[in-house]
Image 1: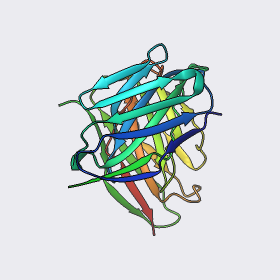
Image 2 (image 1 turned 60 degrees about the vertical axis):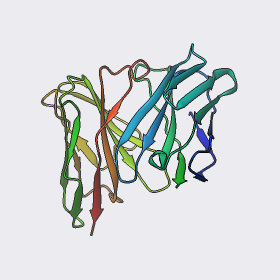
Image 3 (image 1 turned 120 degrees about the horizontal axis):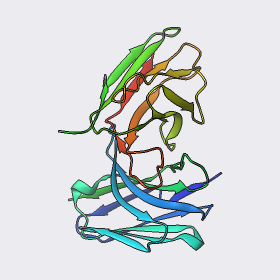
Length: 114
Length: 115
């Protein structure tokens, strides 16, 4: 069964810093990997989706990289803002079954203060 | 304005009562899912549906039931058999059951509290 670990579990930084959120997963046979954002008491919003054949994806101040063979992904957030405060989830998708299961870790809780 | 709606946002239930959580989507998606989220834990899959009148159990289906009579709707019933129902419930949808090709879109969630 796929296990997802995100480090750090929580991060508190001043506005303007460049951030690195780390994710590791145990089964490298994934089809893709998504990074989601979850605000407190809200649903999830997809930020980036990286197919297994890709190495990285970029959207605005966000850049996600994927090293499938080593079971790692990294989310870079440039010039962080208070509005970036949320929990960030790294979610690999299993390619083994017709369902294409998603696996959720506990996430990294980010606080950006002014 | 397309999206997924869940109602109610907060729900309170007495022990021994069944309760139904609503999930509606107007994205014309075939696949729909229900997840449960507990504090400090990852989401866990309860049920999923690929098509109307078809649904499958996820990892933690015991004490829950679903129906899929319409493409747009996938209600979840939390029965009295669910021993620890207090949690945050999230509904999601995607174009197809092949989650590995399509992103999932999530609703805003329903927080269920059993009194």
